[in-house]
Image 1 (spheres, rainbow, N blue to C red):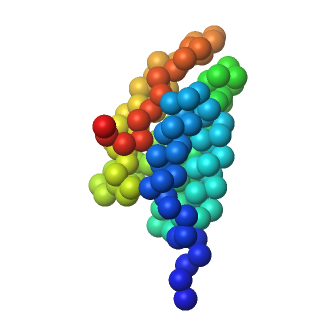
Image 2 (image 1 turned 90 degrees about the vertical axis):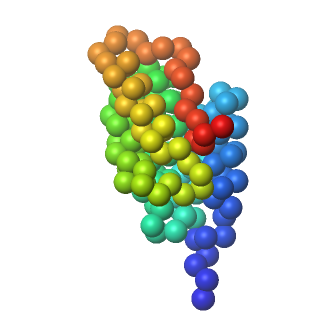
Image 3 (image 1 turned 135 degrees about the horizontal axis):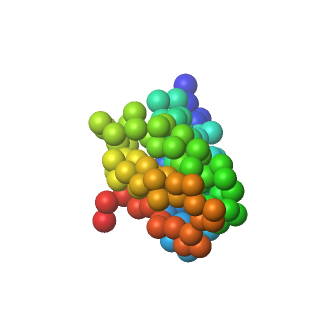
Length: 124
């Protein structure tokens, strides 16, 4: 019996999530990635949750939500375990570095930037 959780094309999901981020829709990207987590193989569950947390962190920055650094840190922690063999051609090291750099930049700032840098899920 095949695992129905693997029916979603996860590579295409990454591409669509990137497109959504590039067009200023981190909330939609978060919903897409969270949905992918529900369809992903068990071995990738934390990977997809981590990606969703990174995009959620961008939404929180846009809302000036103080939880953004914590969300970004947690997303980076979940992704970190996949750096040795990243699936779907993901740039795990780049994403983790982006999140940690952004958290450091946010620091204790009273307000977050209007346009934080957008992560690249894959190397160009």
